Length: 346
Ligand SMILES: [Zn+2]
Ligand SMILES: [Zn+2]
Image (cartoon, rainbow, N blue to C red; front, side, top):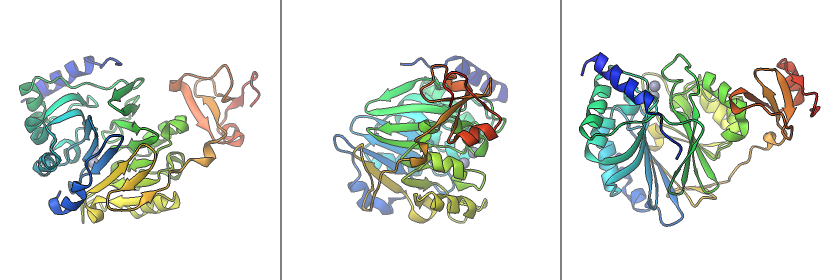
């Protein structure tokens, strides 16, 4: 397919905003991993240097990215070993080969219900193959609505970013949370600190139990302020052994350690399987993680990016989500040049 055809397809897709509405060395783990009623399982599949997460509950499943072109058949075989014949939702975070290279191989062999993409065009061969697969299967991908919650069986999917063009393909990754019961997992794609700074505008929305670490644990992602707000019990880094980027970077690992998060990485731990009953998170064949609450988030002052005024949480004049920026202390707000609201006197 030529580039203009790809761009036209992506433009058509962009108009269709959706309405609200292994490696097989782990067979023992896989046998224990099928979710029973009231459970969900998160498979962080080892695809070398790339991302691929499969989330499954009793009746519904979601595939997030599909690894590299080379690992497409690995992902397909992994899903088949779980008896997956239908993927309810596929989310392609951004058109980079280490995330969507395997998408064509998987989706040409397994039927899919809804596909979410970030709408960015790519003229790369793997992406043209992905678009060709969708045309053959007569599926129109959608760009998710940032303001609605998608209920997928017992999962609640909420997209948090991008709400603007970050001018960078990695930062324009789809960022979202998947909630099951009281347990929330946050998926950062390859987004880095500029996205994190934007997300810190709504800290309560960030608070999560499981974190798919941004950009393979690059030093330019996972800032301390961000990890403090997310306060993950367990974090998973998807990266390949001896990768040329040096991922995960030591600085990011240190910040994760400072945040007291359990950390797994697919270069060392291979495929990581986490199971939840909606209350606690447990590694299949492994330890259980304490659910953490971000204690520092008890008092929050809410700033209005437009008026540069800050309010207490109970104020009647709170800004819209778009203009909101949360502060953890009054000093923080004052130091950032915000003035206290005359009504609520924060
Ligand atoms: Zn990547
Ligand atoms: Zn990327």
